[in-house]
Image (cartoon, rainbow, N blue to C red):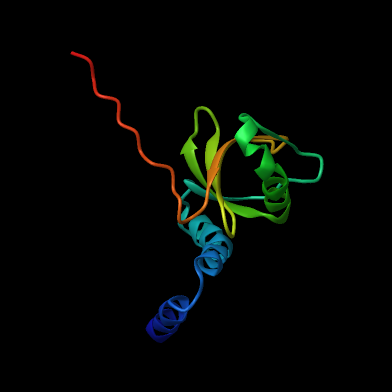
Length: 126
């Protein structure tokens, strides 16, 4: 078993960032399901799902997100109370809100692996 893991790690070093994301998107949900870990989930929507963008700048990414959701993707739950997730595609991460019944997904933001969103800290007012 250890030899197999070593071979996978060594071969992964030669993959592009998009290829590594694809491998994770396919393997991680199965591992998570076996471990009972529900922060990472695999999602797949059907063709009737409504996908909208909350900001005009994200409208260009709607078709790619819709295709990804219909093919199946790896998602990381950000906030269970409002249904926000990060959806990992081969070349872009999408920050979305979606319904548990997989009837609606709203694109809040997106970014490429080499251009992640920057963290903004707002100081407390005293």
